[in-house]
Structures are given as structure tokens and as C-alpha cells.
Length: 222
Ligand code: ABF
Image (cartoon, protein in one colour):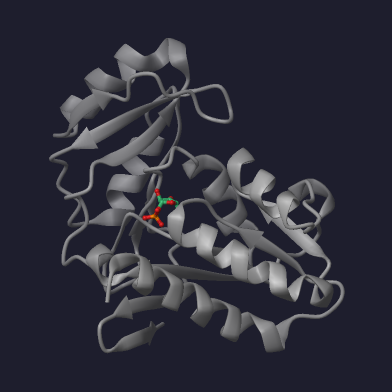
């Protein structure tokens, strides 16, 4: 199977999981990226069976709207039963690195609100120890150099992501070669640096359910 076929398979598995659990008042948190895009396109076929969605990025909001799915501001949405999104890396504890698409802060907010966070990923994303994928950190622009120096003190190699401005008007620093054998600790250390908005480690609030696409079918891990 190609990687795209694996992504479609996990998107379909997420649809199959949530469909029987939706009602006319349900609002769904929807993530960003190519795997999430397959999910959005399939969600369109169910659009009469739920109320609407909250988007983790402007790009996702546009895609949802293009399918006629109502998009709500999180502040007016009330409860979110589900948040469905991809990841850049996952470990077996369902701790994740996210933010390759620069949408990590909104993704983390939606994940915090949702009752059930369903991560959809092909098995190339499964790793033993997180950190081969550079860890994205969203930073207030004036703090860029300060945050870079503090990241070096923590043992990481910060690389400014040229030309990228987040949906919140901030910049991204990608942290290479960081020891992430203790994800919760690293997540908290990075968040404690003044000028960091958030970082792409989803360990304190990890996924609740991972639908992992493999050549032998979709594995459900919780
Ligand atoms: C978002 O999209 C991210 O947090 C992650 O960066 C990315 C994964 O993208 P893809 O599904 O295209 O690999 O969910």
C-alpha cells in the first residue's frame, strides 16, 4: 500500500469510529495536514448528521467550508466530543510530536478541549523515542534569539523556520537533536521559556486513541 492509501484507511477508520457516536448537536474538532485532509473530505459525506466543526488552522477551516460544513469559533462551540488529527511522530504511549504544519498551538488548544483525541497516522510515524522529527516550537517574534539560546542550554539545536508565520502571527523554531526520552519533562521545560507560545510535544495531553495505518490493516491503540 502507498502512504496515501494508509492515510485514507486511517481517515476512514476515524469516520467509522465517530459516525455512530454523532448527533445533530455534535461539534467535531478537526486537525491539519494531509491525513486530516482525507478525513475532512470523508466527513463531508456525513455533514447532515452533526452540527459543525472547530478547525485547528485557517487552511482546515477553508477546506471544511468548501464542503459546506459549518465552522465555529471554539469559544462558541461548547463541548467537543472528538478531535481528529494527524501527527508527525507518535510513540506507543500515544505521546506525539505535532506542528510540522505550523498549526501546533491551535491544535493543542482544540486537543485540550476535546473529550476524545483521535490521532490518525500511517505507521511511518511510529517511533520508539520521539525526536527524530525536529520538534516545532511557536515563539513570539521578538523572543526568537532568547528562546534559541535557552533551547541550546536544554541540549537542543534550534533552527529558525524561514519564511513561516503562524496563523497567530508568530514564528516557528524547529529543535533538532533534543533528548526526548522524557516527553512530559521536555514539554514543560520548553513551555517555561519566556517567549514560547507552545511546543509541539503532546505528552501532557496525549492522544486517547491512535488509529495506525499498516500494511496489515488499521491498528487501534489506546
Ligand atoms: C498536523 O499535520 C500536524 O500537527 C502534523 O504536523 C501534521 C501531520 O501531517 P500529515 O498528516 O500530512 O503527515 O496534524
